[in-house]
Image (cartoon, rainbow, N blue to C red; front, side):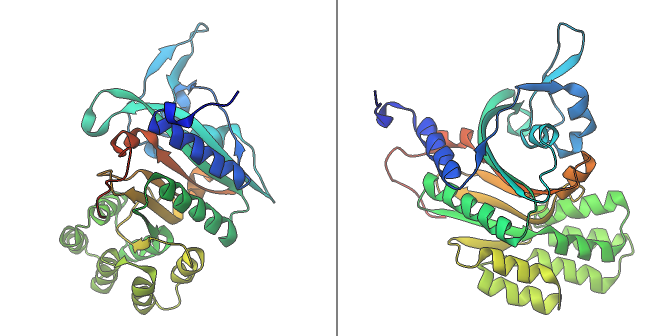
Amino acid sequence: MGYDPAVLPVEERLSLELRSLYHSKGCRLYRMSKFEEYDFYARNKDFLMSDSVITFTDVGGKLMALRPDVTLSIVRGSGDALPGLRKLFYHENIYRPSDHGGPFRELPQVGVEFQGAVDRGALRDCLSLAVGSLALLSPEYRLRLSHLDLTARLLDALELSPEDRQRAVICIGAKNRSGLEELCRAAGADGTAIGKLSQLMGFSGPPDSVLPSVRALCPGDAAADELERVTSGLPNISIDFSIAGNLNYYNGIVFEGYVSFAPSRVLSGGQYDGLMRKLGRRDSAVGFAVYLDQLDRLPEEGGWGKL
């Protein structure tokens, strides 16, 4: 017996379409437990979006936690995929506080993880799935990308303390150029290096307008070539070097997805080889998550605004 998709809430309909998209591109469904040992999350709290975790004691007296993150659980639960490439997708709930210190919420996510030999072809396939995901949510969307390896190299040239380096990353994410320059000057960083990083974080726009500026600023750096090759032909792409992540975990290309009906990002992802190494993995990884809780703002019929 068939069913009428119209009887499903819009969030459920779109989650089914997203899962169908991922399955059609060779991704395999990955299932996991709702909880892990709390100590696992405590050891990797820097990777989490919030330090707050719901805990309980199981019948054996062990402290457990409701899952606050999917990627950590997948990395822990799957072994090295070398020399091949493992493509996974998931539809799971996570449990974390709402934004700005609000109450805990059960948040549904659909996402994709590629693990193993992540070359430029795999990166492009992952970005193509991210673009396809956004296109299913709205005809008006934008995928914004950065390259953390280039950002990290310019940060290294500043020779900042770990504390000042983290403050600099926060300034980059907030597009606070004056704050970044003031911080670096106070730390005694080289003026030329400060100027380069300040310029880089201001680069934003379509690849064909941004990448020539990147090449002029950092001649010979491989990041611009990689960005060009993995984004070529993909629609609605912007380069934005203010996108910053935890450089201890993330590397290479990172990205965020936006649609016209939601005020904040509905998708985020990137390469996270640093996390793989911390958890004892030798292979590489890239992935993204779609935040289904944002879809309660989705218009039932058209009516989208402009990005």
